[in-house]
Amino acid sequence: MSAPRDLLGSGRTYQMVLAWGPLCEAWTTHVKPRRSTHRSSARFIARTLDGAVQAPFPGFIEPCNPTLRKVPPAGEGWLHEIKHDGYRVQAHFDGEPRIYTRRGNEWAARMPTIAAALKALPANNLILDGELVALDAKGRESFYELPTELKVRVKARLAYYAFDLLYLDGFDLRRAPLAGRKRVLEELLSGVGLNLIRYTEHLEGNGATVLEHACKLGLEGIVSKRADAPYRSGSRPEWIKTKCDAWREANRDRWELLEKRGRLG
Image 1 (tube, rainbow, N blue to C red):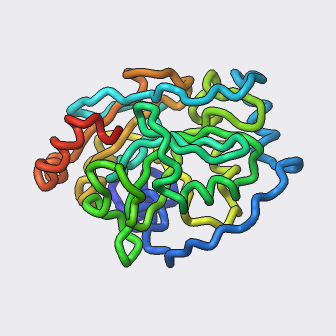
Image 2: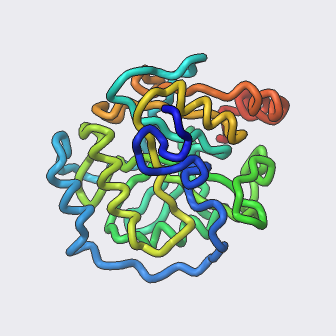
């Protein structure tokens, strides 16, 4: 890759995908009413994925956790996502919104704007996996706006970056390949008109190149995932996390505290 204008042939520039989302959008807490799912294209695509199976709503799912490596993977078949500066949470809707920490604590009442946004999604029931981030007054991610513990209602402006879809309207998608799950997720979130729940973009190509540019932008790092992998709970080699040394050094005290606490609850 010789020119940073076109990121690995994706048509996106690094300025366009900074933090993989529209972080400078005007903030709004307005949430539209939930749409009917009867004609949802996302619902149709989900049912046709290889590996999708009809199943009852499973409740909390132990997260798939990336393996920390010093060097990102090279070669084909990997999707590289920005590692956002926030907390890993699992978002559910099955009549009522529920938001779980990585350890299964349910804290929807402490983040009511995200809970309300879940109600507005065009789905009867779903499970999202993603990262909860705080935004500053200009709509940029601010790691220090998030408390080290969520014992009370969060006062910061929040956004939820969804990077996986595990269940949708009666179908368990965990056995489907990641690329297919992300296709459904992008379709589900497109045109909803919310900026509280955002689709996590990914890039293909050489992981080292993606990490290099992420670090130049001052980001935490990247998570590289096998495009053909199902979703498996626990620490998995098909998800690889690599961090930027400069970010880790700049946030050492807070990062070490969160690691001791299991990155929140």
